[in-house]
Amino acid sequence: MLRIILFGASGMVGQGVLRECLLDQDVNSILAIGRSPLGQQHPKLREIVQQDLTNYDAIEDRLRGYDACFFCLGVSSAGMQEAQYRRVTYDLTIAAAQTLARLNPGMTFIYVSGAGTDSSGRGRSMWARVKGETENALLRLPFKAAYMFRPGLIQPLHGIRSKTRLYRIFYAALGPFISLLIAAFPKYVTTTEQLGRAMIGVARHGAPKPVLESQDINAIH
Image 1 (tube, rainbow, N blue to C red):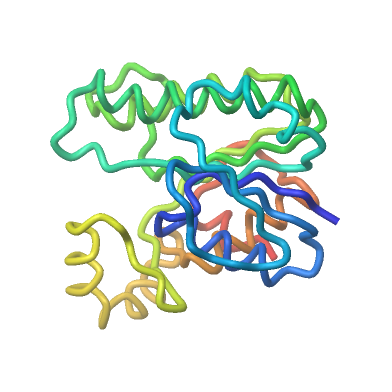
Image 2 (image 1 turned 90 degrees about the vertical axis):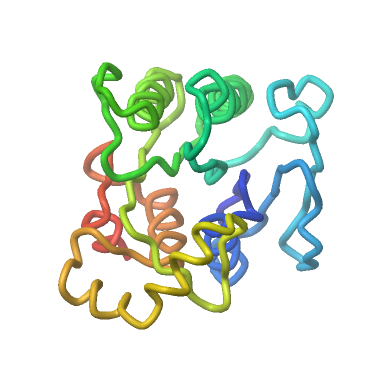
């Protein structure tokens, strides 16, 4: 039975991951950590509302004994300066991961990155470079295992919607064609359901490599 910590449960990806965790019989409990309550009730679900996502000293006793962390917290880089994007993307992720690696050395950590992430950390694309530096830092931490999920286009299912207005407009316009895109470009498109199922599968059994693209995600059952 898996005990899972979930960051970013209110976002589009996090909503999908939470749904699959609540439905999966092998997931015993989910602890959602975020800045605001989810407004959702379930026997498996517990929440910690934590305004400061860089410091977990006050709640460390509640973070022990978990098998996996699904880190789905993230923002679009649109309109952001690099320093601001780095604080949200790199600093928050590594602060949580360092704490969890110390408290749960047997944990599997799964980070939702993105297609096109730059592992060299030296590319021109700001978001790809920061994501790459975040991935590299996570892979150096003393977890049992760490996996970087790099989905491309993600189809939201089961009534899930993005909180980002620009993404909502994008998905509304693209909606009728997403199924065609999945059929035509299966290597680059996945769904919120498949993403959640893949995270649970990797937490359960591991994966053959640390960086998983959309086609790898879709192949996990």
